[in-house]
Length: 343
Ligand SMILES: [Fe+2]
Image 1 (cartoon, rainbow, N blue to C red):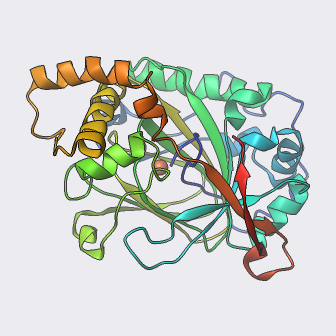
Image 2 (cartoon, rainbow, N blue to C red):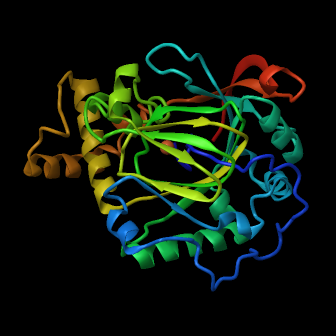
């Protein structure tokens, strides 16, 4: 998941505990002359968006991701752009599906402590865009990526993910190019091929039509295609567009996830809107994988039109909050009657 409604991935370092570094109203600690990356080579440039790989960065040196800095950030962040989530049942076709909690009236410090004690996945959506010192860092991150890869950035967005030692992020894919900048802690990242059976047509259509966050149907047999990365502090993982992935935390984690649109993702998503509506409205069985280029182009044009119509808008679902947060409770969770969440 990404920096949109539900996004994914995280990281943190060992005990991390309470840092004394505030930093919220100051510029970042790393010099703007210092590279964001520790060991980027031409081989990484060649692999970007074409292969899955990890590389080391220096985001922890900025001081922007300590517990104190994050608590201060949470206190300033717009509540409607904050997802505090927990995992559902580990059984069924969508194991560990995330559900929303109600973070209203929780202080930043309270949320940090709840994440350490509980089973939470906190997504501070657009944190890297809405706060000047974080936006400055995001500009450096993507400026350097663009310089090293030649990939032009389109409206890069970034979220900060804060998650519990027991957090798992379910099997899902992101509809735009996404990068996970793990900063603190350890987590295991599993990534899968961007084709069936790992990425089925109907499953990706459901993601683009926002029917159920970014979740994809999962079965243990998919593990045969998994590539596994053990992420340590200050390690970035980059993967091929739309490749399904899932995450298992090994400790309390802090990460940044960034996403950006490209011509390739915009094209595929417009085609997928057409295919999704063909399947759901007209009972057809289209496939991204089988269409000829000319067919895809026609569906792209139609999809751009459909996205402005009620046919597409009616697919978008409501979001609900189903629990409150309290670190004194098991998993930091108190169940409540579902209430509609206004994004
Ligand atoms: Fe993701």
